[in-house]
Length: 440
Image (cartoon, rainbow, N blue to C red; front, side, top):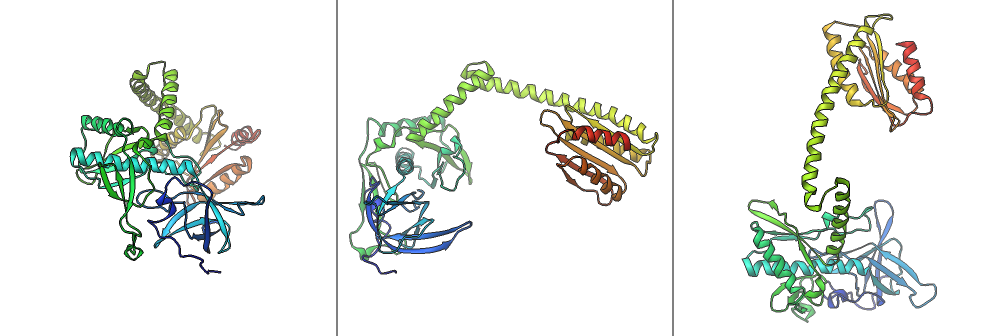
């Protein structure tokens, strides 16, 4: 089962690292296939003699792609590779079904994902080289943004597409603009060839932890050790967009944000659509959008304060009526039903004022039900106030029989039971108000 026709290729010498533009129909042999337990189902770790699927490393995510079994036959089977990681010196591929060791297969890379990763990674090498050459600022760390995953249910937010480089200080606006100009010169009129040089061809000199050592050269501009896959020249990076915002980290360090290639076009489309919709909604020009939003924010704050004031005043009136009801026949029983725009905020304010009145007037053995419904959503809220836990339990039981989707709890020793209704059924609100009119 585990007999190997040839030794596996070590990380650093993988086909994807020797030629990062190999993308499909790559022949190789399955050397190992091991079942592993995943969270929801069984997965398999597959090791090949060689691979064009890059295992995560150097700040670059691993590839995804496909294994094609019986690739030259009509019944060819395509198996998705969800993740590629490095274990020791070798690349391990994760799939959801086994492939027999010794099987000859073809490999195929998710090229759109790979190209995106190469544009960001090679772009980072270029940005870091310019930072060090122009301002002697070393890259302390970097992370690739917008990393897609086969496990992710939704695509990353456009703002998450920015990569981050940590440097020793904040760049001025002028320096950031200069950095952008220089980087984009190297992706257009000053494009540089990119080459990868392995430090030694002697397998005996392979690092036991890092694998075969490689250095990535960007013309005469930069030379850095790296295990990732890279582009052939800086023109393939495409446009580089820098965010004007920098974030502070660890002392005087700052992170600059950038994105490269197809991500820039994707982000431009998003921001253009966002600006267009905002202009239409706010009836203004693009330059006026921030001012209009600030005006809306100020108006909303004033409206919220006014609503809070009116809520308090309405609660005072409702509380007064409820206290009067507690002193009428039948004694110590009262209810209130707020329809149309009823909400928890109103009930909470009424409850707060009501409990204060109950304490001041030394009212005992009380039973109070507060109900609210929002007709727009047909949802609602219920509060039951009583100084007896048994009374709370009985009333809550009666109400949940009327409103089937009423869920809540609390007040086992008296006090307050609170619940919400996600949706009132047909005639349930009317039945609820009738019950309260008859019993409270």
